[in-house]
Length: 298
Image (tube, rainbow, N blue to C red; front, top):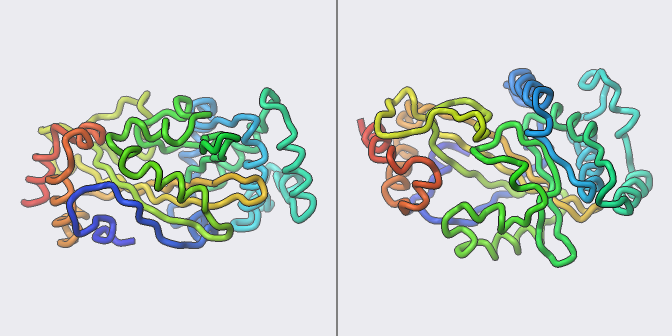
């Protein structure tokens, strides 16, 4: 997706826009692989409880995600995993189904396989979250690795339904909450549903965990300090476990890069100028958007 395609030729509003893509392509290594994996390892090994979580009810989802990682990207191969994960996570056919049944039968209070989760978190460049509908039909976050959060804590959201997770976003649940739920409940296996979300930040850091207290945008921001932060997201059905794999890739673009694309610049200015104040506050740009618009126009 180009920068221009990121912004609709329209006023700012909630939209359910998805593209079809390949899950293997989304999770495939990129040119920044070594850099991204090194940073993921840093955060996961320094504070694993902050950047990963897994409920026992999410164990079956993790097992299926591990098998998909093996299928798509060679997870467990000796070259990519010298610790020898291949002997533990190379499942197929009936073996995978039996393992999923065993995980489903486990108690909610049982010890979740956190070492497996951390291994996956250090293998994929993208963050990965695991969701599943409960008996009442509420889609809940059951686990994942989130090394590069956009100003939220995994610990605040684990176990919660998506409506709760989205509740800080002004007007989202009322506007498209039902549509999101319906879309997630009808995901088809074998394809990635892709979408893209953007924000503005004062730091090109990948990890924007709120505890890090990174500098925030305000009216004093200069061009070199303003970054467009894009989350490229993928939703993939986990048919054996009945869950959903949610992948998130973060890419930062300098304001100079945005300005170099005339269409992207024009559309971003329009989005900033038509964004409701409550949304600007939520995105952390309420006191900076006039300055950002000015910088874009220079």
